[in-house]
Length: 448
Image (cartoon, rainbow, N blue to C red; front, side, top):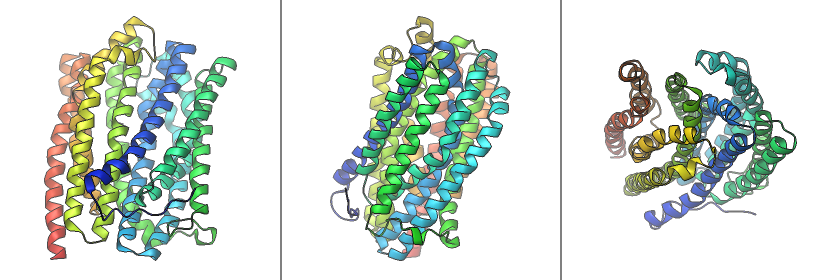
């Protein structure tokens, strides 16, 4: 199935961004739904303790996967820029360097995560009855990190070229296999959390093989060739310049969330399980909104490379409008139908009640995060990686830690803990918008 590079520098931006994002939305939704299926199978067939064990690892897993996603964002921006400028050699060297970097990063995270996951989980005051299952799950899950790195690399390259359909097809197949394996390993084999982790890594390697294989078969300029798989120092540096701050942001962002998890862990096991069930909504909403952040980077990158200034800024505004709107709509639906959503993961009435405490507050807050995340994506499309990362670390990481030790420490209630999301997103969004405006004016002065 061969797809040609789509020109993102011509035509109606509103329509193109929407249709570009739809396969990404479906792809992200499927990925979240497959992950939710993991949790649902564990919660329904392995018990609430297994559910709590898997849920206790969520932030740690997201810390490492977020770093790989951050690196793929740098790949996306650079490939899109070179494609927009018609710089074929730049595309080839960036793609091949990115493939090697992504695999090495995944391998590094596998080693680091496997060694340090248990002490980190213990330092977070993970419940004694949950720790064994959590450590088992995460050590198996981390075996899939190299595959996750390669899949995100392939997804970034194809998205930069305007091809968002093939990643959807590959993820759909891998995800369907994941669900079947979940049921087999947990229900038939009785493997519990280990079975869910095994199903996850098998599906990750399937999706990685499919997307990398497609790039090797591709005859376009962004296709992979064995004889070109070399790490070019300048291209690697350019990828890392944007990707490392983005990955560092995601990692530190999740590190700050570890303090939130520690706060949740200070309550009883029922609250921990309820938080774990409700937190599945975060991935669902964030990843749907993230489709427009990817679109923002791809459209701004190609148009920036082509020198089309008006389309660059318009791409940002349209992407922001879409992501903010869908965040508020989905959040409102979760508030209205939260109990039905939570019942997918547990039948325990107390756990349902605990989960609703999170959904009620978060449902009205998701849309705010678009102003922060979409603006960060826009700044990175201009080649600005470091300062947006510093801003988000201060506004959404340091601020959260301070909140946990001040506001939450004073009230000691679960709502006082969850409210920090809305406040931190608002503060960070204002600072990110201010910096983006300065960066845009600077770029316009350079171009004359």
